Image (cartoon, rainbow, N blue to C red):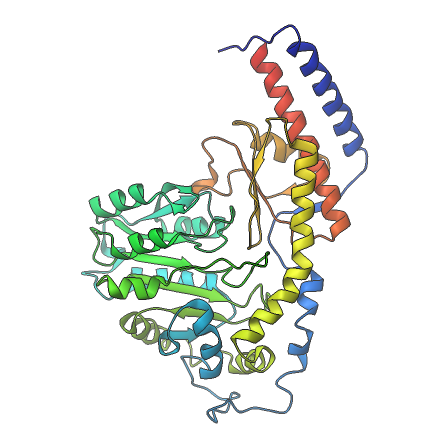
Length: 428
């Protein structure tokens, strides 16, 4: 289908396209080398936790007298679990403090579900003909990578302003016993910053599922990562599941990866008593205990839940100007063009940029050729396939402010060039 331009519109488009091509040529000539691919903490953020390197000092006993240098303590240090119980909305007795990576815990839970029998299950997942997960999109590429790693079929579910489309989630979960779970980043979700509504949480907890061993992988990675004076509130999924008579449905994950040292933090698993017992029984066959020295240094450094909140305010002071710069540049360069929309998250680590259908890969390619590396187009969807080819994930955290501004301006140039070229083709 062709689109005929009005007599006034054709010259206007030609002028916009000429300007975009000129701007892109100037951008490419700068020889930039900028990276907006992953949501890593900047060095300045990591510096906020520098005191961890001198802890626990000469101390080697936990609050209960445990010698942290020795074996044991599969549940993790009680004082650290107490700190994060409130923040992750899990009773301390049902929360485990483990290694440094929540992604590792998600991986292990999948392995144990395939090779063992989950509470409520009739058999191991590996013995079943098909295993599928619901995947809200846009979503987190590492969740999708885990599914591909284990041959789990991925069923996309659209995201809304309140979380995943619950009509679709309820239908899919109720009609097929092969649907074993759903991925959720419920607070400041990756990548669009959505916070699940209370009603969404309630419906996830009470919905009918054809699989008796259906699990919600509740990846609460940004539980304390606020960017405004009004932190978002999230309903208690674990409590809602218990109240609805589905106590084993939720696996809650969290970590300090973007709170303290990204590569040397502590990860957490919270769930029902039956699920905690299940994971501990599997873990004791692969480990004699987590790194309790690292857990002790975290407990001493963070002190309590209020200490975590105060620390995250210092993180916010570094991150908020970067997100404000992204919003300012997108509005200045793309506002009113009709070529893009973008999210304005109140927390988390990402901004989602939507460009005209069929343009995302072109934008990412042109940016890379100009020295600006972005997350691959399609990474926010299962199998790396965005059917609309429209979503680009922007990660503002790692570059310095000046580099970020350069990268964002360059990105907008690429959006204008790809968008106006597409309009020209459509009008031909």
